[in-house]
Structures are given as structure tokens and as C-alpha cells.
Amino acid sequence: MDTNLKVRVDNLVKLLDEKKAEEIEVFDLSNEDYIAKAVILVSSLGGKHTNALFEHIKDNKKKLGEKILGYDESDDWIVVDLEDILIHIMTPQYRLRYNIEEFLQDLKSGKVFEDIQE
Image (tube, rainbow, N blue to C red; front, side, top):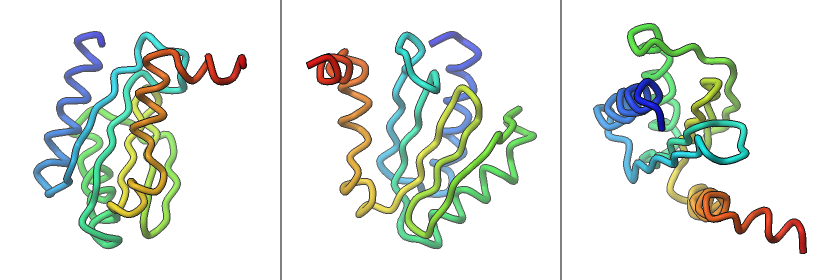
């Protein structure tokens, strides 16, 4: 991960941590064939907290030097597109259900493309 990207990711993690996001995980995908160079996964305390974390990012995007290109939201899951960084904010139930961590770990290990080629 280049220095600029690392600083941006660290600032986003700090911002999310300040508002009590839980189980924060960062995936460096800068050397992978993926739509983002980094993915930040966080668990919220519930639907209202999911939205509050997203609002906190939106309120601080200028301070962070981030531009939100798009987002998709429900009560249980919000994904934020910052071009080269994706942030997934999910309730614990959705995080367990969709298990994005496993997909991203498989992507980093090359297992995703092995499965496709089989």
C-alpha cells in the first residue's frame, strides 16, 4: 500500500473508531485485480449506528480529503465508494451472513481466480 493510501485508510479507520465502529478490518488489495486498492470492513451496533457511521464519514469527507463517488445503503449495510477505497459498514448479523472477509482473503491468496478457472 503506498504511503498516501495508507494515510487515507488510517484516517478513515480513526474516524470510524471514534464513533465506536467495531471489528474494524483493513484489506490491502493494491496488488490485486479488484475494483478498489483497499477495503475497510466495520461492524456497527445496529441499524441506526450504521447510518450514524456513514453520516460521520460524509460530515468529515472534506477534512479527510475524500470524495464520495457513490454509496448504497439499507438499514443493515452501507457500502461507500471512495474510488480506490471501499468501506462496508454492516450490522454484525449481515457481516456474518455475507462473510466478505473470506472473499477478500481468498482474493489476496489467489483462490478466487482458481475457483473460477476450475
